[in-house]
Image (cartoon, rainbow, N blue to C red; front, side):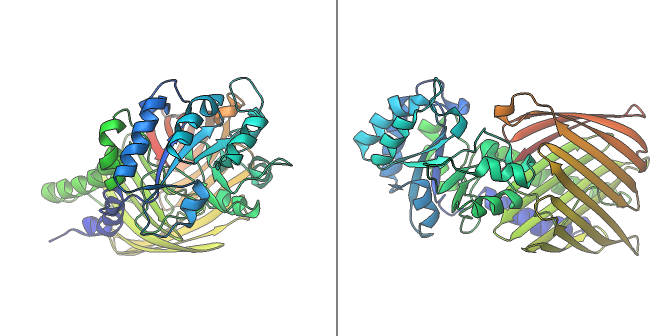
Length: 451
């Protein structure tokens, strides 16, 4: 008979694994590149001849090539493909444009407006020529900012289109977006966005179209990727789905571990600050796994803790949430019984959230808030039966055009793991690695992937 903790995982993990390995065709099929003629595979570059081959491969598979905005409006049954180029490199005009023109395929170029007319980037005259040839020109923000780290004023600035230009779609830099970013894009008159990541279970959100990451083996794997929608995160999703289930089964075989509180900062109504998905694994004296997957106004969330305290306690919980802005409500199940959650957005500056669940026969609760008062600054607070945590994180003004990848943070915990803590995070695109050290000498690391 299934344990309560295993039952708590079945619904959210079934939905997430179903999305990761969906039998539905990957529609639309979006291929995203940057440079042309320089590098290949995981570097997001492509040679002109390889570009030609991939277009021909998808045509043989029955795909019709369209621009991003056309893909966002396509019917679910249509097999459409988009050839997308981010950052606005001049090599797109020199090397990709002639190939696609010869094949009769429109491209979509997402430009960083502040880089136009700079060496190595597209010129405004080249942008006009691409438009005249049927290409779509979209926005990749003003300065290639990490949009999900910006306050409302910063979002308006980065998503605005310069006078004399026009754009219908945005490609979110570094694949980082959330509900605040998507609303800001709509307020700026944008009707579609590209977010990266594996395909949605149902109809894709026009403001967050999936764009599975390219691989060095796409000349061989492209038919499989088109069929299954797999991308570089597939192994991560598979590991993230199976690891908590295996842990729960092992718990059952060895005698179930004592139940402990949910992770202090876990919000089962995670939506306002969620893109299309998230997976994270942390080791800090215990192991903690979190998964989230968004489908339109719905999100699925799961969290697991193992090896907590001297008794090696464990927690497993899962929820399904529904958003009716500005409120998100969640219901689910954890190792002890029903789980309830809710969150309220703070007008584009973050959210407050709360949860309640039964633990050892009694109701327990937790609450928290995340606030983005200024660009690249985040304040957080969380309180529950296991303790309280206050934190501050800020991005250093370094590599501004890559979303300021280096972040410093710290704070204080009361209760479980009491004492000060400091953390250092480094991001590479939509992946990040965080190291944490506490005043008690405990060291931890966390790996996170978002899309």
